[in-house]
Every structure is written in structure tokens, then in C-alpha cells.
Image 1 (cartoon, rainbow, N blue to C red):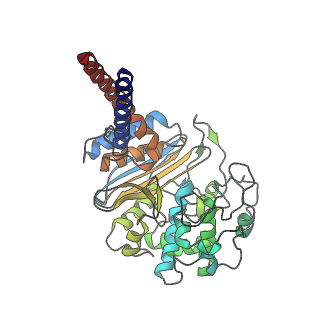
Image 2: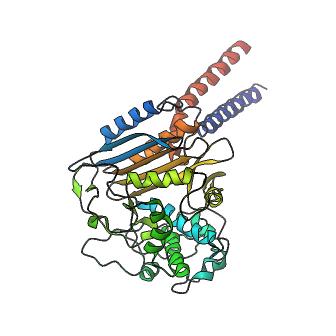
Image 3: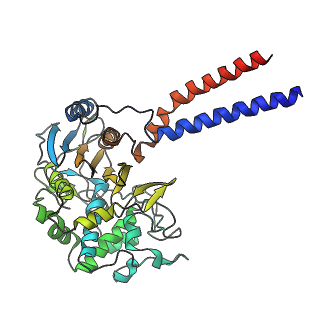
Length: 415
């Protein structure tokens, strides 16, 4: 009888501890244990905290813009070795994918493509290899949301200034991966079943734009997105050839080489804080003044890709956190070597937005962007999973100690 009682106490303790730890983890993903760096609606305090973090952490160049209800309320430009201002061009790495997604959705608005049709319907210059999976399941919408079953995981490597950039088809047949490994752009999982980040998918979308529009990728994006918004400092030009561009820096503040990129639609876009502000304001506007309609911009952030049941991606934009009103804080980040990091995020409920371009730190724009999402919504973004879990350690430990003390007290009482 005594053994049974002891086993019951041990099992009860384990269950109680497990339930409490599970509860703290659940709360972590809702931001219960995390404190925003500024009080709600105090934009001045957020700007102060953000600029202090920039000055403390980046030895390279930074451009930062904060928007409240569609209007700029703060700007900060940190410089190293040259003047940095709102018109300085920065490489944007994977943020380029959002620009490509806007171009693809513009084609859909024009009635020239069906987002739910197999992408192969529109391609003649290159085709997906046969791998045993149904290539017809690789729809345009799934490519936009990284749910098409592609398993390349690219990561495109840099090209030196003395190297020739291969043709688009050559990059599709034989991409240069940042991992240095041989990678094939092909279907390696059932299309539509799960999320798997694919730079190769956006190289395919770059080809799609060229084949359907009959124009070069760069010309179509310029004509449809950039020129209507007067984004004159934005392009897919090699950043080393742009006169008013940031230098490249390592994390130690040492100037580094500038690189070229073969995958323009995935990682080759450069832009300035001024131009990205124009883009954000156009997205916030009730009648956007470029080639994508309001209805389409809204549909682009309908959830498609999920991880552990949480929505993280729409038809192009990342879905950072729910707003609590059936919508999402959305946008896109980008990061590349040696220390490039960009983040643009929009809250469609408040029309607030965050823009940061960094050269000299690999994650500063995303880190402060995570703070902005927490400040806006009270919920950590999906890129802050590690930080959210870490925030649960203290309450999990304190609660576990209390549970053990309570159980010990009742055991003592019962004796």
C-alpha cells in the first residue's frame, strides 16, 4: 500500500511539473513572459531604444525608418566611412523575394496567369526534373509560399566582380549554392503538404515573369512596381555599380568586397530607405498606386504555410504575428553574407510600419524587427522562437519549485 502511495505521489508530481512546463511554453508563444522595449504607442521611446541598439551593435551602416499611421515619425542613419542617408542604396538579400512576389501577383491581376495553375503551364525555357512526384502540384501560389515541395533549400552563393553571371536557365540547371554543395532544383516532397524554404522556387518565378510578360525580369518589375512609385534608387543592378550605395562591411567593421548575384528574383534587389518608405506607404494606402490591387495585397497575406499549426507565410509575404483582428503583421526579411540584414514589416490594423537596412551585422534588422512586432502586438514573431522559449525558463523554474514545495508540504502533513 505504501509503494502504491509513493508511486501515485511521484506520478502526480511528474504530471503537475509537465503540465506547468507545457503551460509556460504555451504562454511563451503568446508573449506572456516577454516585455516590449517601449510602452504601447510610445514611438519616441521605441526609436530611442532602437537607435541605442544600432549604435551599440553595428560597426557598419544602418538606415532605419519608423512609420506611425502611414507617416514617418522617426529616421536614423548610422554611417561608417561615408555619408549614409535616406537615399543610400543597400543590398536587400531575400527581401528581393517579396518584390518578385508583387510582380507575380501583378501578372495575376492582369489576368495573364492563374496562381493555382501548375507553373509548368507557362514555362518553355526550363522544366522541373522528373523525380517521381507530381510536378503539376507545383503551382505558382505554392512557389510563392514555399509549399511546392521543392527541397533545394537555396541559399544562393555570391559571384565576384570579375565573374560572369550565368544565364537564368543555367542557374536553374546548376545553381551555385551558398553551402558549396551540389544542389538540384526539383520536387523532393509532396507539393502542398509542408513548408520548406526554397530560393530555387523564386528563381522559377523570375523565369515565369520573363516568359509570361515577354520582358526581362528587371524591366517588368521596374515598369510594374518601381517606376509607378518613383522608386528611382531601387534596382537589380550590381550594387558596386550604384554611385550612392553603402559599402560592404564585416561584423568587425572591416570593409568587405561587394558581390554580384545570379538569382535576381531571390536575392538581387537593392533599395534605399526612401524608396522602401514609398513602397510601404503604397501598400498601406487604400488605393495603391502601382501594379497590384488592394484586394490582391490583402489576399497575399492569407495564410498558406504553417509550422506547428502556426501560419508563417502567405503568397509572398512573411506573416510575423497575428494582429488579433483576423489579420497579420506582414512583410519580409533578408540576410546574406558577409553581414547583410534587412527587415520591412507592416501592421495593417494600425498602419504602422518598420524599415531597417543593415550592412555590418547579420541579424540586427530582424532582431529589432522582432522587438517592433512584440511592441505592436504583444506577441513574439515566428523568427523569435528561441527568445520566446528562453523567456519561459524563469517562470517554468519558479513554478516547478513552488509545485515541489507544495507537494513536500502535503507529504509532510500526511505523515
